[in-house]
Image (cartoon, rainbow, N blue to C red; front, side):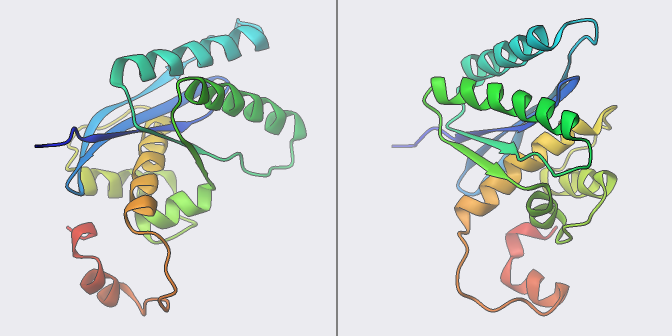
Length: 185
């Protein structure tokens, strides 16, 4: 009897551009399901934008039936107003997942980059190149918000499939490659 693959929805929240990425995982093998971004019209007022984000996440959940939901946590910046707006966008996306009964997990941007590239300070382009290698993606994308969301989903898979342990830190790439053959291509 074969179980259905696990579907993970990753969200990179934003009030004007919200990235989303879905992967399916079966026997620890990941496959890209969907990767795109919602471009919220700037002419909408703040509440209409939030409603559109909420409805889009609900539609993604209805269409793809994810088992798990992962979202990027807002980073702390100098502009408090921007942080508040981003927090609201994140909140409505989380509410859509919770209302659908899907477990929600939040990851810090540095944790996501560290999980994908091994470097918490990696740039968006470096993350995208690594995602292309991990999932064998040949296409290019216009907006890196979609790839950021895909990174959130993959980070979540890595975290739940290999929970943190009390092992000592690895000494470089060679040791990482030996201990993680499935993550090196």
